[in-house]
Amino acid sequence: MDVLFGNLGEFLTRFGGTIGLFVCSAIASLILGVILAAMRVSPVPAMRATGTVYVTLLRNTPLTLVLFFFALGFTKLFFYLPFFLLAVIGLSLYTAAFVCETVRGGISTVSEGQAEAARALGFGFTQTLTLVVLPQAVRSVMPPLTSVQIALLKNTTVAAGFSVFEAGGFYRAVNERGGSTLVALLWVALGFIVLVIPLTVLQRRLEKRWSVAR
Amino acid sequence: MSDQSAPGAASSSAPMVRMAGVNKNFGDLHVLKDIDLEVARGEVVVVLGPSGSGKSTLCRAINRLEPIDGGTVEIDGTPLPEEGKDLAKLRADVGMVFQQFNLFAHLTILDNVVLAPTRVRGVSKAEAQERAHALLDRVGIAEQAQKYPAQLSGGQQQRVAIARALAMEPKVMLFDEPTSALDPEMVGEVIEVMAGLAKDGMTMVVVTHEMGFARRAAHRVVFMADGEIVEDTTPDSFFSRPATERARDFLGKILTH
Image (cartoon, rainbow over all chains, first blue to last red; front, side, top):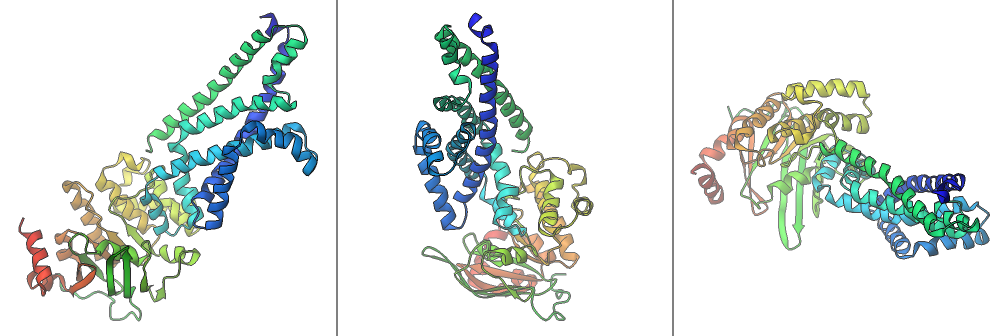
C-alpha cells in the first residue's frame, strides 16, 4: 500500500497519461481503420492496393519498431513534434491496420442483398458503404473491435520506452525512490484491469442495444 | 380481364423500358441471349419461366444490378450508363423489390422508407416521414413503423420493401420473385399490394411463379427458357393457348400439381 499511496500523485498522473494516449489513439485508429476498410472494398484498384499495402506493412511490423521510428526517426526526417503526439501517431497508425481488418471482416458478414438494395435505390458506392454496409459491419464486430482497442490500451505502455509519461513507467519512478518494483508493477496491472472494465461495459451495452436489429 | 390494353401505351413516345440485343454470360453459361423487350408506360409485364431460364437475370439487368455483356437497356428513353453517379441517378427512378426483401437490418421500418428520399433526393426529413407513414399505411404496416425488420413477418417485410421502393416515386417497378421466399399464407397479402399498384397504373416488370397474379393483373406475359424469350403474349392466350412445346411443358408442370 505504501508503494501506491506514497506515490499516489505519480500513479494518477501516469495513468492520466495512459488514458490520454489511449483516447486520442483510439479515436484516430477507429477513423483511419474504417477509412482503410472502405478503401480495401472499393471498386478502384489503386485504393484497394493502397489499403492492402498499408495493412501488410503496419500489421506485420512490431509495435516497438513503429514507435521507435516515430520517436527517433520522425523528428530527424521531418520536423519536431512532442513525444506524446508522436506516440499517438505511432499507436494510431499501428492499431488502424487491425481495426481495418476487423471491420473488413464485418463487411463480409453483411449480405450482398443489403448493398444491392441500396444501389437499387440510387445510392452510390460511398453512400451504400456509409449508410448501409458499415453501420451493420461495425455492429457485427463489436467484440473483436473491443479486443483491438483493449490491446491498444495495453500497447500504450510501449510508449514508456521513449519517455512519454504513462503508467508503464510507474515502476521505474518507484524504484528510483527506493520502493519495490514488483509491488509497483502489480499496482499498474491492477490499474489496467480497472481501465479495461469500462470498455467491456461499453461493448456489452452497444451489443445489447444493437442486438434487436440483427 | 386479362386482355385489357395497357393504359397510356399508345400515347407515350418512348417505352418505359427498352432492352435491345441484351446478352449476358456467367462464364460459359449464356444466361441472356439477344433479349429484346419493350415495356410501355403503365404496362404490367409478368416474366415466367422455369428456374435457370434467366428471368431473374433479365429483371436485374434492367437497372444494371447485373452488368450485361452486350446490347442496350433504356429507361424512359435514356440509355443506362456505366456504373457511377449517372447510373445511380437513373436507378433512383427504378424501384426494385427482391426475393429476400433486403430491408436495411439496422434501421427501423420508418427509417428504411425515409433513408433514400432524404439522402438521394434531398427531401426534407419531415416531408419524407410524412410520406413514409402514408405509404406504410397504404401497404398495411402503419402500426409497425418503429420496429426493426427482424421483428416483422416475411409478408410484412416484403410490403415494407414495396413501400420503400415507392417512396422514391419510381417510374417503373421491378419485382424479382417477390413471393418466392414467403410462407404460403403470406403470399396473398403481398400479391394484393402488387395488384393494387398495377391497378393504379404503375409500370411493372414482375418475375414470379404466381400464376394467379399473372392472370389477374398482367397485360402481357413473357415466357423465358434457356436465356431466350420464347413467348410474348397476353395472359389469356398464354395460359389457354401456349404456342410452344416448352411453354406447354412448363404450364403442365405448374398447373397440374
